[in-house]
Image (cartoon, rainbow, N blue to C red):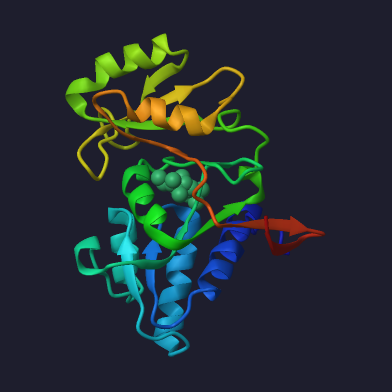
Amino acid sequence: MSAEVDPVKLMKQQVGYAAAARVQSGSIVGLGTGSTTAYAIQAIGERLQSGDLKDIKGVPTSFQAIVLARDFGIPLVSLDEVDHIDVAIDGADEVDPQKNLIKGGGAAHTQEKIVDTLANQFIVVVDGGKLSNKLGTNFLLPVEVIPMAVTPVMRLIQKLGGQTTLRMGVKKAGPVVTDNGNLVIDVKYEGGINDPTELEKTLNNIPGVVENGIFAGVTDIVLVGEIIDGKPSVREF
Ligand code: 5RP
């Protein structure tokens, strides 16, 4: 491996390509969001262009996925046009030993959850740094909220034991606005999240919350990109 290659980028690249290699001709594919999935979208597009893959339809999870799919020549369909999704490929910010996830680092978790949970097979692609013994110990939990409800939702989450921060834009004044026109609160749970399944439901029950970033019990396969003895490799978790 050359000294200039960023190892995290390399792991993301390899695991993205490995997921793309599992896609079969004739499939309807959920296209996730983030830098790791971007490599999978690129590789699916390249397989289509080379003729190795035929008759693929992509269901995007964000504006980012739409732009990448167009760049790499993947035909897109909406959920109104399909009655199933064969496979979804998506990244994650944290993965626990039960394959529960925290997602939403790119503020796209609402559409991601819709598409990923509809898929017959949900493949998660991560680099080794995303694995964790307990969700919430390495990454804050994103919660998408309707703008007019931000203050009461933050108060209620604080009462329930979370520390809240409104996510602010980078190279954009003011808060991050999601693809759905909403805001994102990032929540810290001291000591991590004890019961992801329960917390996912509790947060989604708060009026004004659109969706939170816990994906409990929905992952089929986790592919992990690693560097072993200086060489990139991919293993199934
Ligand atoms: C976006 C997501 C992403 O999948 C997650 O943030 C992982 O991103 P990356 O592959 O860039 O590390 O949930 O909302």
